[in-house]
Image (tube, rainbow, N blue to C red):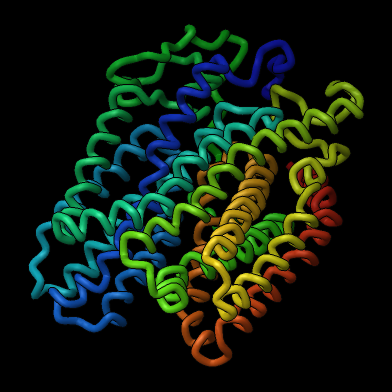
Length: 477
């Protein structure tokens, strides 16, 4: 790195406790992307009535939200890679807060305004996950990154679990507008927390975290204080990353991982998007509130999967490292954080994938027939717990690997990932009811099982070509 010694100083000046504090903060911010999407679902019938629009037209606001959820990080992700994590994160939360005020006050005669404000809401909330992934890339090494990602995704994964519960309770007790006032107040409080406590982590601005940045990049209450300036022998890395995150698609191994992640995410949405309608038809004793509580099953599985898989990724990385020579003889150096083509980073991140994919295939095939046979409600809920665990374990693994492969571009790679998986998920959600009407619930989930099967050849292709792609990137750059 410009001839500077990197082996004698850690990758980040932040202590372990400080890193966990930062990860906890960005996890809090990341909760709003799925929360704003899922909290809206229980109020759709009510909003349809008060706006005098069909359910299909109100569902269009959900589709537009998902589309913007995929597009917005394409702008905000690269912006955070260039302009800094702290101001970009704060800007997203500000847009979210203001859009929620508009939604809480929107006239029932202005359906077009409801649509526009939902898009703005997505533009503010969806990018927090991409920016948070960039923060983790700034402060962590591959040895510890899996654990950080496991805890970080707890926030975003809590949203799908508690969103319908909160939304149903607010809409039933205080009216549908209360949903948006709740989001406005909570996102504003989160913005205040970020402004007060979140330090800047972008390495082109603060280096390893020890450089004192300009005023805009400093928290108002500096719980984490810089340790002093970098030594004169080291310089801050120059910003050389492209603003266009789609340039990452020239890398074949990244394309494979994006496709793999998108398939898993689409199958996951195939479960969540139909839970309300299928459970209401299959188990008539459920009401809006209890259906909302059913979402806790898949959300709980995701929460467990986030923590357990994060620890597993760190353990697996250490296990493989112990079997190899020291960094100076090959592998991954802590200073440069570059993956040597001899280190099996794909194996460290994706080694458990075959078993997870097979389990997802089995669960998908069995879930639909459980609903057809109207078995005890505990059975599909248990399957949802398992699916939640499997989905987040695989999505976190591929996300962590992509950040390993593209150091310094965590937000951009996450923006690309979000765009691809949201696009495929939106396409599936838009047609899944048509498939159910055409072939029935049982065969619909057999089709989803077949979609999961496509992940297996992509996995083995990644394991085969990944090291070659990494070696080619290192030899050329």
